Image (cartoon, rainbow, N blue to C red):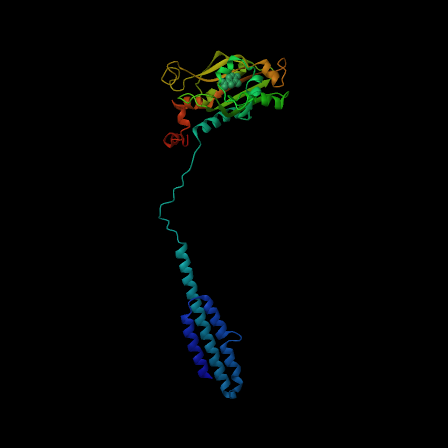
Amino acid sequence: MQERLEALEREARAEVAAGRDLDTLKDLRVRYLGKKGELTQILRQMGALPVDQRPVVGKFANEVRDRLETLLAEREAELEAASRELRLTREGVDITLPGRYLPRGWKHPLLQVQQEIEDVFLGMGFTIAEGPEVEFDCFNFELLNIPRDHPARDMQDTFYLTDDILLRTHTSPVQIRHMRSVAPATPVKVIVPGRVYRRDAADATHSPIFHQVEGLVVDRGISMGDLKGTLLAFARQLYGPATQVRLRPSYFPFTEPSAEVDVSCSFCHGQGCRVCKGSGWLEILGSGMVHPVVLQNGGYDPEEVSGFAFGMGIERIAMLKYGVDDLRLFYQSDIRFLRQFEGV
Ligand code: DAH
C-alpha cells in the first residue's frame, strides 16, 4: 500500500510540474486529493491492512497529502505570478512616448465677433430674437414701409423664390415679427443676429450671403438721445473706451429720422489712415427712430410709444476690428487666415 502511495506521489508530482495553467491544476487537485480522488480511494482500503500497520500507513498517507497540497499551492502561485506578469506587460504604458496630437478647433472670426456684439447688448439688458431666412415679401419690405414700387428696393437686390417669398435681404423683418409677438407690451429691447442674402457679385466688400445684427428698442418716451447713448456704449465696449461716435443724417424707409453711425477709427484714433481712408471715421451701422407706420404695423400705437432701431453688418464690423481688407477671406476657409483668430 505504501508503494501505491509512493507511486501516486511520483505520478502527481510529474503531472503538477507539467501543468501549464490553473485549470489543469484544479483538475489535478480533484483527481488526486478530492473526495473521490485517488488518495481517498487508496485510504478506503486501509481496512484490509493488519491493525499494527494502519497508523504507519495512515501517517504516511497524510504526509503524502500534505506534500501534494504544498506542491499544488506552490505551482498555483507560480502560474498566477506568471499570468499577472504577462498581463502587466501587456497593459504596460510607455509614458516616455510622445502624446497623440488631437487637433482642436476654435470659433470662426465671424462667430467670435457676433458673440462679442451679442455679449455687449446682453449686458445692457437686451435679449436675442430670431426670424426665418426664407421670408415673405411683406415682412421684408412692405410692413417696413417699402412698397413694391419703392425705389429703396433697388438698394437691396433680392433673391425671390416666388412673387411673395424671398431670401431676406436684411434682419429688419424680425422687427415686425418680434413686435407682433409681444405687442402691446413694453419695453421691447432685442437684438437679432442672422444671415441675410443679396443678389450681389462677390468682391472685396460684397457677398451674396452675409450677416447682420439688428437692434430694436420700443418704449414710452424713447428719444434719439437713447439711440446715441446706447450706440456710444456699444462702440466703446467693442473698440475701446476712447472711441467717439457721430451720427450723420441718412435715409431708410423704416426710420424717421435716420442716421448713419460712424466710430472714430480704432487704427489711427482719428488721425486718418489706410483703413479709414484718411477720414478718421469708420461707418459701422444704419439707424434711426422707428417710423410710426412700422410701429403701427408691429401692433404699437405711435402716439403712445416710440423706438429706435439699428442694423449692422457683422463682416464689416469684423473687417474694421481686425483690419481685414477683403471680405471673401471670411468664406474661403483658408486655415492660414483662420488660424490668426485662434484664441483671440
Ligand atoms: N436694414 C438696413 C440694411 O440692411 C440696416 C438698418 C438701417 C437697419 C437702419 C435698421 C435701421 O434697423 O434703423 O441696410
